[in-house]
Length: 496
Length: 79
Image (cartoon, rainbow over all chains, first blue to last red; front, side, top):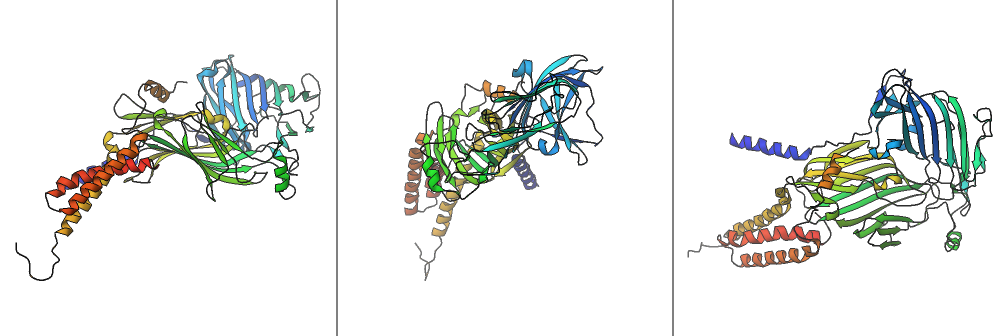
């Protein structure tokens, strides 16, 4: 009877270990589904809206600054932003702040879909304090659109300049009537050979639309645009830089209390979404231009700024070690310069892995309350390149030491999935609790976003590995003694 | 927006984590413990008596347990 009780208590202890508690304080980017007849209640109007589209990088970044006004008789706190379904699935880093109080942090946002195959979905913004009737508030809505640029022409020569096209609505996406609005575009250069011209009658000032000023264009202003109105325009501009897109990034962070080490490994699946080569790749032509270092649509180098104190870097791909890399440790940052085996032209792909070690003391702190630890690591590191890099999906794993329990985390990056699992590796008996977080449509602007993880790790759990090994060797001693005492001699037993 | 876990991180700024054995000493300590374990194991193999089992086997096993954990860390597999 006692043994059954002991056994059941052992089982309970094991199961509590395996299902390390996950109570993240950051809400996931949840998705709720509404009936197809749903229309956002017309309780707001946009008094004034200015939308800035920055095309400097390989993904358009849009910032909408809008003064919203409650036109209802009751206080309201739910503001909808509509997007076409196919576009919404490519919108990343959607964040809303109070323009006049930006340091208060982003507002809570969720995705709202409709139950039939509706072409429109919404981001639902929850204002932290409901807006009183006739009151106004200035919102700053920022987001990036991934895979939005189309090379035009789709095929170019190896040393040709690349042109890309971006299509968007001159009217800002809005579920509410907008009194006055304007869309400003910032191009990387003044080379904009083609753009849609809108009739001057639409323009509030009856001027030519768009207005050009160097590398800046502006569509509008437009007065009294109804809710949901769209007016598609296209611009085609020079962008002789790679459109670097990571279809997947897997990032592992492994914590070792015994070794005092934080091991990072990142596995990339990169693709260049730029214009494809018209002819075959010419190594001679490529090599001739290398000393001049002209702008190119090919990705030739990646620079990963690592935190100071990073050591033992490695850079491998499917073949093995890639020797064309350089590591420059420094006090401010440790720069890891990677050159892929070949320049990555439009339509080409390259997958590789990089990893490095760092002292755990800069990332982990012990709490004064018992045996709890707090870990602060960057959610995303990755290359820093001028034209930017977009990640369709980031899977982050934080592998905690064996025996860690009560795992909690917090990050400002919007997540689509989070769970704990068990990762088994060297010298493990039960496996290590692993926090798995997934985010989609992340851009390199999120490089400095932190992930904070807290967990409990009793000192007895740290002894698990040496004790298992100790018992193992002691068993060898025991077996040796037993086997050594077996009398295998032939003949009569010796009597002492 | 205040972040409770960020406050926890800031509150613990005075106590960064330090391992029991620093990275620089892992190899020396791990190697010595493994050598000690090998030596004691050797002595036991010369005289495999019942009294020697706990007397030599236990210290050799403990030295091996901790020594191998430190040694595997020292060679770059941070367990």
